[in-house]
Image 1 (cartoon, helix red, strand yellow):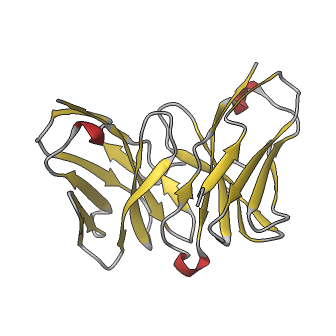
Image 2 (tube, rainbow over the protein chains, first blue to last red; image 1 turned 90 degrees about the vertical axis):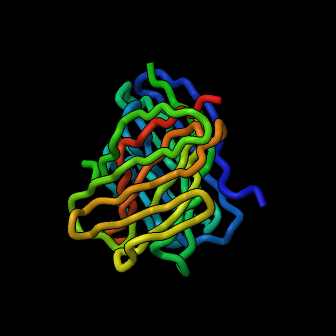
Amino acid sequence: NAGVTQTPKFRVLKTGQSMTLLCAQDMNHEYMYWYRQDPGMGLRLIHYSVGEGTTAKGEVPDGYNVSRLKKQNFLLGLESAAPSQTSVYFCASSSARQARGEQYFGPGTRLTVT
Amino acid sequence: SQQGEEDPQALSIQEGENATMNCSYKTSINNLQWYRQNSGRGLVHLILIRSNEREKHSGRLRVTLDTSKKSSSLLITASRAADTASYFCATDSWGKLQFGAGTQVVVTP
């Protein structure tokens, strides 16, 4: 099992450019999440999904969009990148059978917007 | 806004010593979880304690929860250099986790 994987690992964007971050999990988890982590801060939830075809806003959703077309994939899009979106992005998944249980995290994507 | 706040922000100890870090939170919770993050890596789940539990053990980890004080503590006994990492508490209120800013622990040989 690969667990949770994220692509790419690193990316540099110019202000105004767009990109999509891909998260994939092979644990058949129902729930998936996107977080961002900034220096000196904990993770903040951007968007999440409780099942294929469903998404919901988290704590800091502005400037991001998501899609969950397949159960195993969760995509995070930046339509027009801004320097404030420079951050490390983590994807996570969890099982509905443990709806309030542990989350499994990917290795992260380090994004720099210049 | 962050639900949990860890204390201290940083902790430096020698191998074999115990490390204790605390987490305070603001609203009622279903459970509280602790995660570890090694430098440049993703978070790894360590332990979960439910709101009706007061203490839980897992190997060298001991977690306590005091819901009346809205606080939790994580104790790592007999620390090792490999325990060097950042430790985060996360509270679950409605199926979503809210993380604190973390405690950075450095264990020197």
